[in-house]
Amino acid sequence: MSITTKLLSLSSVLILACSLSAMAKEVNISILATSDVHGRMVPWDYGTDKADLSGSYAQISSFITDYRSHHDNVIVVDAGDIIQDNQIERFHNVDNHPAIAALNAMNYDIMVLGNHEFNFGIPVVDKIISEFKGKTLAANIYYKDSGKPYLPATTIIEKEGVKIGFIGATTPFVPEYESKTGYVKQMEFTMPIAEIQKQVANLKKQAVDVIVLVTHMGLDNENNKSGTGVADVAEQVPGIDVIIAGHNHQNISEKIINNVVITEPHRYGTVVSVVNLTVDSDATNNRLKSKKSATLPVKSYPADPTIEKIYAPYHQQLRDIANQVIGETDRDLVPQETIHGIPAVYMEETGLTHLFNSVQLYYSKADVTAVLIDNKKAVLNKGKITRKDIANNYQYTAGETSIFEVTGRDLKDYMEWSAAYFAQVQPNDKNYQYDSVRGASKYMTYDMFGGVKYIVDLREPVGNRIKNLTLINGKAITDDMKIKLGMNAYRYEMLVKKGGPLEGRRVEPIWNSRTAIGDEDGTIRNMTIKYITEVKQGKITDESNHNWKVIGINP
Image (cartoon, rainbow, N blue to C red; front, side):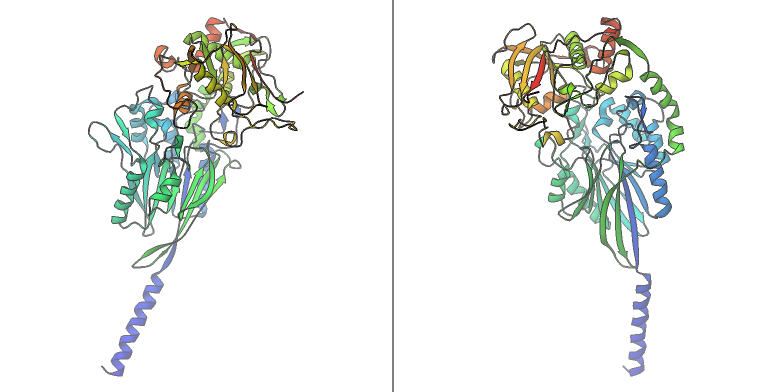
């Protein structure tokens, strides 16, 4: 080969190299994620009938619009629990569900089903899926009879030549949550890790450049069952780049496990998880250069008028319903003070806890009942009582009363577990403290009991705090006594699970208010409204008689 030919050949190589270099570029892609918005369509709390600017889809919409105005290649996803809570469940059967209409207006690309989507039966789930213009994904839901997948497991979205593969998954505990309704008896919810592994392999065969898991699962394992939290997924499933979590109502800006970026956008639409991907792209290859995430609050954003317009007719209906007067009380039923740092409603029997337990005792005919007040600002003042007062003070929309026949020992162990929500009082303590782990949990696990008299002594160690326990008639409760215990079935499942205070002692319920009275009428909220209007003829007084109290710090 002549020198001239060699020079020409080298020149061609240099030209080609320069050409390929010119074609190389950096592609920036953003994924905006929401989860567990729970009916917060506009910045309004229909339990209290007050504005709540902490978060909503309407504010999220303004955030998304602003973000898109400054960024190309934006993908928007939701990880579930959309159509339940904040009274939106009243509209689960309407055509063109307002929450799905809002997601469509915001151009969401992907939706994953949360456990609360199944609260109303598969026909409702089918309806919202059909109305959603994006892709609904689930890698671990199957029809039992045919074994066929209920939904597509994955989808691929391409931005500037970069292929992002998305996998959807849902908590496998849905059948357990719906065990009393039978709503999902025709479906199988499999353990997610094996399903996700299979879908990662399928996406790799399709030569995707990035793999993102969107799942209604929290960081930690649920009910202590391995493989049900995304930390286990990140450790055990290689090939995932990003996990968008939900379900646990945690604000996880960014957590890295096994080189997987994990984020969770809290709850009630307060934040948006923003995942930023940077990909080096050229004519022959795409390489994920960096990935990072953060949760950004939306409280400073105004409500988008488009979303407000979608929800306007429902907003007014809910406000009208919330303000319907159902009765009146001749005195304040909840002391508005703290007792050594803890709201009084948790420190002694009040008219409010007595009311909720009286409702359950009346309709269930149980011997003993338990109630949770998951609102540290519970209030029911002298004067008119409206529907919103009941919803504000009992916040579990679907909560029901189920009767379990237990022993006196079972009841005592349950009550000791409840009392362990508080830390032991030390000699120099001036205030009560919540247990460091349970007090920080998504779920409040402190119940108050009706049909009994007792004292909780927080000076004592866990397991020895319940004192002077008797039935309301003064009869002592013995270990072998048979007791009909009325309580929420979800709480019962927590007690009998592995590691729970009643592990290995499971019994089946002998009565359920939603079965006996009706799916809607049998909720604790609606039984309370019925009790006030029909049994008490609209007149409520404080009949608590202070049947229980917490002690441990001297006045």
